Amino acid sequence: MTPEELSQARITPEGEAPAIVLPKGLRRVPRGVDELATEHLIVNMGPQHPSTHGVLHILLELDGEEIIAAEASLGYLHRGIEKLAEHRRYSAVGTLLDRADYISGIHTELALAQATEQLMGIEVPEKAQWLRSLFSEIVRIASHLIAIGTYGMDIGAMAPFLYIMREREALLSVLESVTGARMMFNYVRPGGVLRDLTPEAEPLLRQFLKTFPGYLEEYHTLLTGNEIFQARVKGVGVIDRATAIAFGMSGPPLRASGFGWDVRKERPYAAYEQLRFDVPVGESGDCWDRYLVRMEEMRIAAELIEQCLDGMPEGDVMAKVPKVLKPPAGEAYSAVESPRGEVGIHLVSDGTDTPYRVHLRAPSLMNLAVVDEVMPGHKIADSVAIIGSLDIVLGEIDR
Image 1 (spheres, rainbow, N blue to C red):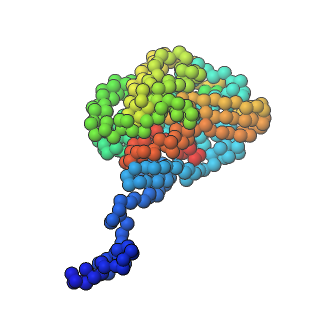
Image 2 (cartoon, rainbow, N blue to C red):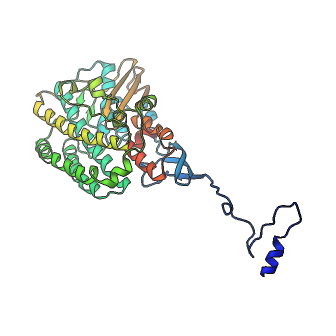
Image 3 (cartoon, rainbow, N blue to C red):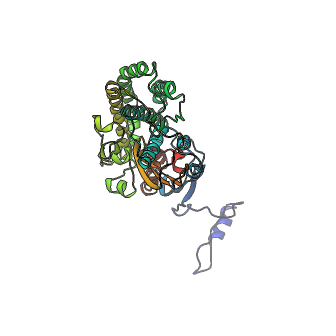
């Protein structure tokens, strides 16, 4: 188009809006050329995503990089554990629950065993109670190591994960020597535990206790002191105390918000009433505090392991219980403090050798529900930091 033709194209009859001149070959004017306009984008985060800590789907509504709304959808890992439990004898239900929170199955086994013992009035030997506490703390450290290591990778720090696997392998060697398994332990049974510590287990634990404090300082150097890591987590994903309580949160995310609820202290079980330990509590309830609470809990768990080894009584590790358990009709609820929070079992018996109903209170479910409330206003990259800081396990959420 020549200058003369362009000039003529701009001339319009009096009173009409100027005609838009389009370059040759262009059919419409792009939005935002003459005015600033944005559109919200819907993004599916998951269900297969490297940073969701499981098969999780979160629907994000974005305005540029900012999250306007978030909605978590579940059920991709549902295996019907609670329904399957209704067709298993009481002694066989624990193998199902190992596959719920597959990172710390000992705690779910313990909650089930305690609920069964309540119904049947079983008195657990003292040594079995101490072994239950010992292995609960071993698994707590092993679980928190996974949480911290993968969290570092979520933020972009690869090195800490490689170091952390060194300590986790040492703990898994102890668990394997006693239970015969590295993940699905089936160690805690109604009436006690499977077996006592093996001859090689205690020396392995003692050696771990010697080296772990130094390695924990290494993690603080590699990750806690990293300026980039701090910038990514400080002030991000703040959950205040009132919100945490309203959503029924528990575990490190709740304690990071300033509420020091710990089942081991509030409703002591196993040998915790005879053990001395503090409950770390955060202040601001952000991703940084949730990280620090877990780091401190690992240090405290190592001290509890040493107390258990030093104070371990002699005696039986299993009470005399019938081969086929038939609790009287009734119901019971038992909760323990898992690495993710209060994991509880609501058990209903109809007097037969199989449970009438088994319900698992999954702390990860309550902790995850808060993302719809917390994520709006953050950036896309922050969503990964928030999910990782909650340390969810989809196995116990979907079950």
